[in-house]
Amino acid sequence: MAEIKYEIIKSLGVLSESAKGWTKEINLVSWNNYPPKYDIREWDPEHIKMGKGVTFTVEEIKILRDILNELDL
Image 1 (spheres, one colour):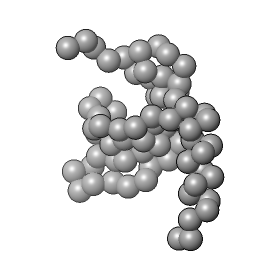
Image 2: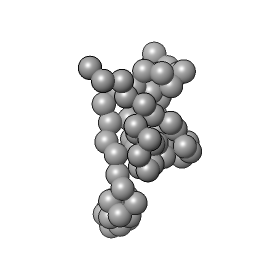
Image 3: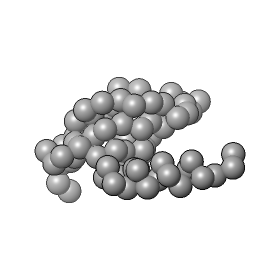
Image 4: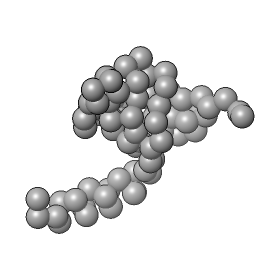
């Protein structure tokens, strides 16, 4: 399996933390030296291991923001 290179450009916030110390975070991440994307996934405390996640372009994150703003929470 090919090595995945990543760099957390900016930490935007922690959404939750598990009993084992992993945190679900939203960050701006560059994957394999590509332009950074907004990223939501779980990370171990050292940010070495990660869970499955989802990435968003700027356009997608704006659409997600608009959808969330319309929800009656």
